[in-house]
Image (cartoon, rainbow, N blue to C red; front, side, top):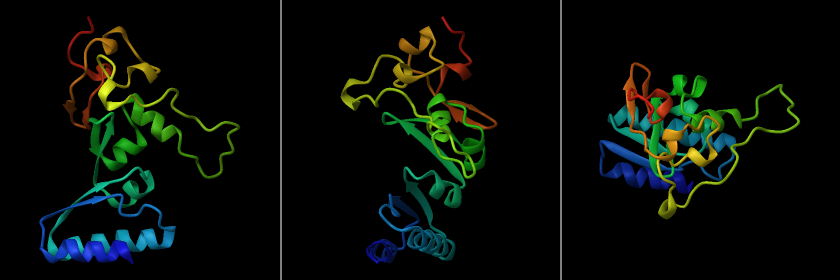
Length: 166
């Protein structure tokens, strides 16, 4: 009920943009679906857009049109939800997707991304993901990649850089 009250308060001002930070956290699946449906309905009726901040890939898959994946405070991949979830390009996004259990599969060990997130005050040189990246190259430790845009979206990874690896 609290989420609904907060949504109602936010919509009183008739915003054109709603930033919903973890609106379904700690809710059971049925209430979560109701909140998402309510947000969708209200946005459709008012013409507002929503930026949904969440760690729940299921909520993203059900709700969003586009997704921006962040690591260590920076956007590392952007694209249509179906494209990013089905064929992630950044090694971090690929690791996230691989760690989601699949219905019908019974792995002995659930895949995980080795290592730990860096503190934002102590990011490594170059790409912040480089100490944990299974595809790390020498350039990754020296140069932070920018977002490279293409027809699929954008990715910040030297694997997709237009610059020669030096």
